[in-house]
Image 1 (cartoon, rainbow, N blue to C red):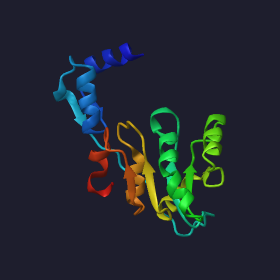
Image 2: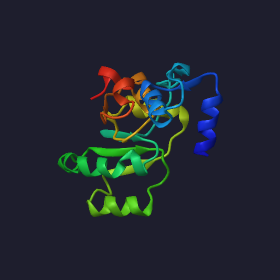
Image 3: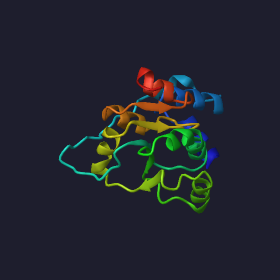
Image 4: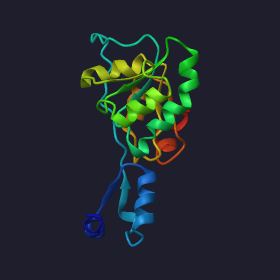
Length: 178
């Protein structure tokens, strides 16, 4: 599949990259590709916060959105905020989407004694804005993202953002992220 993508990029008149970071990755991984034919076009965000939608949310939570496996760095996040979660009886880590916790995730959370402090919920698309809007902050500990749409969603909702200082995040979040 990688060979096919490379051949397609070589033959393409233009290549759209979702960030300068992705453009640099293409140039680094495919040095024969002419960098002048790579155009950076950023994603937009269609997320709306609808105050008419009532969502049953915890009173005080840190928000994590989406998939949790591998480079998403979920285990690192849970481990790094354990002390904060333990010190505040009301605070929880709310994992929105990404499917139910795997057996490995449940075991990890249980071993840290956080099974009542780290919860997973599914949501309807029209509810997502409320999840961001009511969170203390949105945390995105991913080690790599070509763009990171949840960063835009959090910003559109007025939610503070804590994220890794890697890949496209400094470019996408700018001064809005910590």
